[in-house]
Length: 330
Image (cartoon, rainbow, N blue to C red):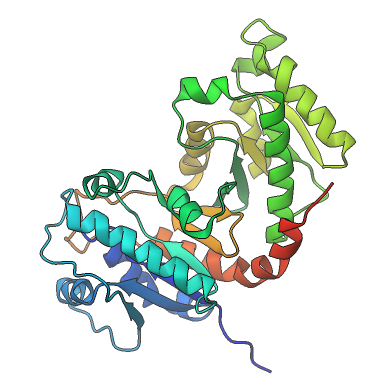
């Protein structure tokens, strides 16, 4: 019996950015079509606009038109109310398709936080929007760059605020969530994952900060007692390299830039973001709307290609494992 390809929904993102261009370019690739059925989601007039811009035929592509609103005129590379609203509508429509099992996973294109704000949408980004639409608010972010897996304890907080929330309970819960997430994706390994340190040289036993000794190490020890294969804290200046070379199966990064810098320096174009904890998987490119090159037809679509391929790789196992994820107990 030939198994059908997983259906991956791709909302086009902010129309004024490169999202529509890279989505259509990626959907046309043989490398994508061999492993995924892509359903593109956006306004009818936006598809017509990009078709003209790229001088390509959209014949053969599966397109889901958003019909409940109009896009209207827009300019590339600018923050615009209608573009922020359109990006919101595309994500909302994709979520409904996923909840209805019409698509198996979502691979998102870039949105612009200022455009959302201009449209009076105060939710800060994709992850938060998806949390609202699904009612799932304890979501985990994972970056995959080739074989390197980096989970995040905190996301969109200032560095000062992120340091303030590094507590024993927060770290322990983050370790448990990382373990659950790896089981959800089927990437759990006999090789332990690592928790990154916060301070230089792990604080040198309190000389440069006490978080490692007071909160992080005790949380790791408790998790080990619970049977979780985790070690740490491991100094952040070496842990990502060690994970890339196979010493650790993944890394729990403590704040946004700690993990972002490591993964994007390793391979910017192939860094893919995964959002875990909803009934369906979401992957995403990890770059912005690139307003400076939008509309020029020169945007690279490698990251979009990888986002769709990654979604297709995990989509079915994710949905199968999700009930166990929800009912997980140690």
